[in-house]
Image (cartoon, rainbow, N blue to C red; front, side, top):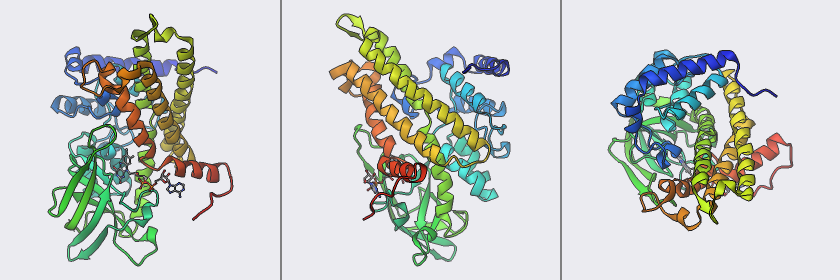
Length: 406
Ligand SMILES: Cc1cc2nc3c(=O)[nH]c(=O)nc-3n(C[C@H](O)[C@H](O)[C@H](O)COP(=O)(O)OP(=O)(O)OC[C@H]3O[C@@H](n4cnc5c(N)ncnc54)[C@H](O)[C@@H]3O)c2cc1C
């Protein structure tokens, strides 16, 4: 099997390299904070300042970013091409240049709005979201509606020109910094549970909306509870039809799985681990020389490559307008499992020093691996818990008997 790129693609790679050399300089690289650390791995430290925005605009104009989004709404609008997408991701990572912002707004909401939003919503939100100017959080989960999301109870009642929203969301990532929330709200309480839900865009500054942080395993507080107390949302702030929000949310969920299942983060962690193994010594020799460690590393890289190639399949399916279906679930489950195992191998390699938190003296790789290890626990759950996903794969994919229901 020949897995090398053809001459046409190598030429494309050269063009991309040239663009990066001309537009993202050594000084830009030096000024990019935490480029190798935790933030780079989780995407949290992505730059959205004016310089990064200017650079992204140029890259978008060249068709190098947000290729699936029409130019009219601020995207790169290019025919789908998984190989070009892979080359771009590789080269931008190598040049430590700002790439697509991978977050709930750009990766999940923007493509959903392009398909289901009104023209006014597309004009108001898509470009600002892609450039990180408008930050979003996702208000789906509730205390009694996680895996069984359609049981959600946060209620919206139409009064004149506004929906009046009351209830509570939980596990809302980044709500503390978000400008807007895309939320699922029950508007037709008498309809069957999947049919009574509306997809709403809610300004986080609306009176009556309170964000309360929740501290997580890593020590950070990126999760929140969000309370709605008579929050008034303009009537036209809904995406798709009233009562049809569940079906709009399927589009967002597909994009969420693609975001979480994207092997880029796992690849960054793996590359970091491989580098660390050259400098970390055990019994007087670099760990990379240890045959047991090498075996484990090679096994992980095999899984990682499989996840990357599955990612190409998903891109191809998406490009053809096909719903990736089960492979999307498989890839998300696989990638988060690999991420966890890469983190675990790094923790084993660093032994007790691996427990040092980011910012602590002598924390190897700025504490990136310990945090990443814990972070992947969460990633496995976000967008659907592993048990549920395994059941879906077994029942729908492999035709096994249904899990006993309570
Ligand atoms: C890192 C992270 C980020 C998140 N960000 C957001 C966000 O921004 N916005 C948002 O709305 N939500 C977010 N969530 C919430 C996430 O979507 C839910 O945690 C997830 O859907 C599971 O729901 P739950 O936590 O209520 O667990 P539950 O549904 O209560 O599940 C608990 C356990 O029971 C198992 N279980 C439940 N039902 C079944 C079944 N039928 N068969 C077999 N096993 C079952 C599950 O697999 C799981 O192990 C985030 C979660 C994480 C971890």
